[in-house]
Image 1: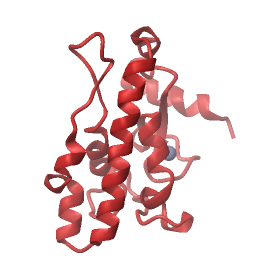
Image 2 (image 1 turned 30 degrees about the horizontal axis):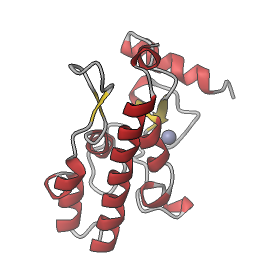
Image 3 (image 1 turned 135 degrees about the vertical axis):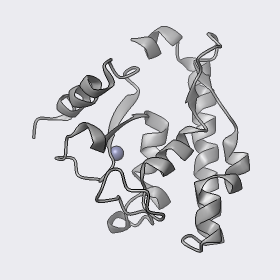
Image 4 (image 1 turned 90 degrees about the vertical axis):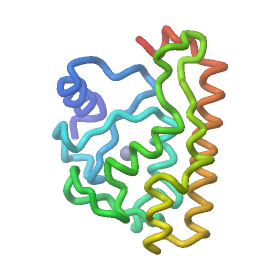
Length: 159
Ligand SMILES: [Zn+2]
């Protein structure tokens, strides 16, 4: 094992820049921490990453409901693929315009039915109870963003 810095570096090389700061992680889309190729790595801010790797969004082997896709570019419903990650990120986007609010929070968890999880509910891949659990997670991610806006100086994010 070459450790975390190894795959951070692979992702940074692919992005052509450093990760956005110390609170950004590299997530392995297929769940295999030894599969360190750029297409399998995704830059994620810590509060989202934490929620992805535990609870209902975790892998079935850990008690969650969302298996990792074996193909990092999979678009198959029911897997924690890039589309799901992007949906979660909507709640916690990088603020580009507002220098006092490093994170621009979109409140999209309140319109979750319009996103991926609404579709999964309609297709009965998740049930209403799962849907509500994910909505609570998205609200938690949103609140973490608000907290980070209060605490975290923008310079740290750009470090
Ligand atoms: Zn991860």
